[in-house]
Length: 113
Length: 113
Image (cartoon, rainbow over all chains, first blue to last red; front, side, top):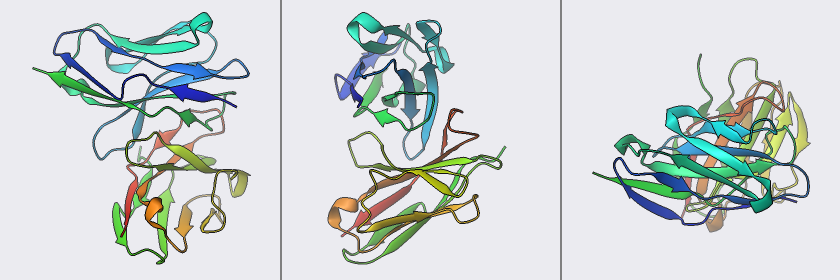
C-alpha cells in the first residue's frame, strides 16, 4: 500500500519568493511520483512526474521537484513565485506506471503581492 | 484537441435521491477513471476502466455507486440513493493507456442536502 503526506495545508509566500511545497510518501515498491495543480473550478493539471529516471524533475511553469529516496520525499520548488501560481497543489504516488494514483491532501498556495 | 468533458458541472439533490454524472474522454483514450474529491481532501480513485472493462473498482461503494462504460467511450457514474457524505466533486480522467498521462475533466460538483 502507498500513502502521501503533504505538510502544510496552506502555504503563503510573497511574489518573487521561493516556493517550497513538501511531500513525503510511503510505498512498498519503488514509486512513481507526481505533482498536479488545480486552479479554482478546474480539473487537475499535471505539473511533473518522476518515473525512476533523473531524480531532479523539471516541470511546467518553472516548477521542479527532487526525488530523495533516503528521505522518502518529493518536494516541489519554484525559485520565484508569481501571482498566477496561486492554486491548490497535489502530490500523488502510484506503485507502477499506471494512473491509479493515491493523492495527498493538497496544499493551497497563496501568493501575496 | 478537445479535453475530457463532464456534465453537469453542478448538481444539488436531496438525500436518498439518485443522480448520474456523464463523462466523455479524449478521443482514442482507452483508459478512463472516476475520482471523488471531498472538500479539503485529495482525489480518491473510485473506478478504472480499460475500454469497456473494469480494471479496479475496489474503492467504489457498490451498495450505492455504479459506473458503466458500455461502448468503451463515454461513461456514467450513478449514485442511488445519495447520502450527505457523497457531497464532493466527481472528477473524470482519461489516458491513452494505463501508463500514459492522465487528463482530467473540470468535474461535477455534487451537493446533497
